[in-house]
Length: 217
Image 1: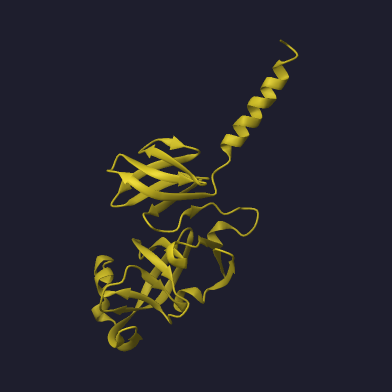
Image 2 (image 1 turned 60 degrees about the vertical axis):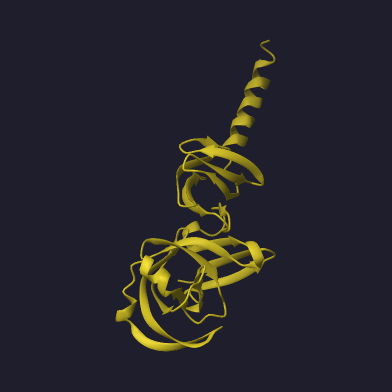
């Protein structure tokens, strides 16, 4: 028995180290009311109750189709239908300077973030000059857009009146950009469009189905 003890200890240590490794991708696939969420953790479906930890992922809270989770030493907000959360290796670019977005449904890059501290859904649009927000979403975010400069802009529905505003803060993951130009337009949009007034602050690269934005300054 004494000869086996070091082997058992080594095996236990290796198992503990493997369990300590955080997952790379976490996706919100469904909810059970406000009690539990169906999470896809590195490709494996798991039912996680609020306050519980499964495969290194803790479900902090669950409300309105959004789940707040903690893993890899970070807290993230996940939403139904959005791109999964991802742990970025700290051996490359520091997380606070890099945004990593896996491709979502329909080949689009979507993510959860905040505008002036208010949570919203983003969609990357390299063809948009500025960050574009619908009037309905702007009102939800508490933007006083009617005090902005009145302009006209080209949309899929033709030329429409819009308001040009300055956003104090746009945050995605751990990266925050301040003083971002945006336009508020009439109509309904499923996402806030992350246009070039935000994207131009980053060095952008795409590898297969993953887009990486690295802050320039």
